[in-house]
Length: 170
Image 1 (cartoon, rainbow, N blue to C red):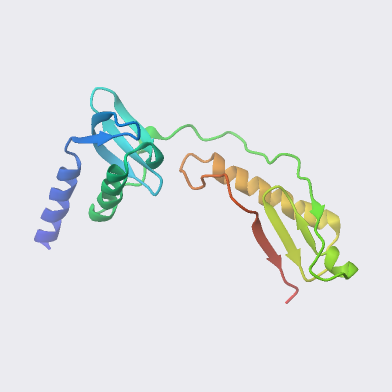
Image 2: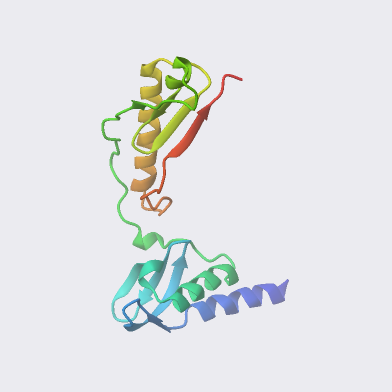
């Protein structure tokens, strides 16, 4: 047990050492890694302080270092609370536009059981009133906006396709 505690302490100390980092443009800088999640690292840059650097701005070898640091460092933090931006006071989805989507078959029932909003495709095996579907789409769009607005990096945005929402009667 003492050996594990000593190894954890040593790896934490090793992570606090200055290291040379390189950005995608080839510029180098000295920094200590403080926290790392799946998309960015928080670095304590020498002479500048703590900054959050997205992986897309770092050289591939530094991205690999940060990912391995996250795996190899016991209880490595995902975020540094000192670097969190302010939480949004209020988030609201823009006015939701809903469009009926024709089904795979030519029946009128299928045409009224699929709808699309800006980021969601809603499908049901029941014929739902348009008001119910519009309310559901509003909740889904507002939830997406709230997740993007949180400063925890839970959602990068810029989805490539719409989220599928399937509603079943049974």
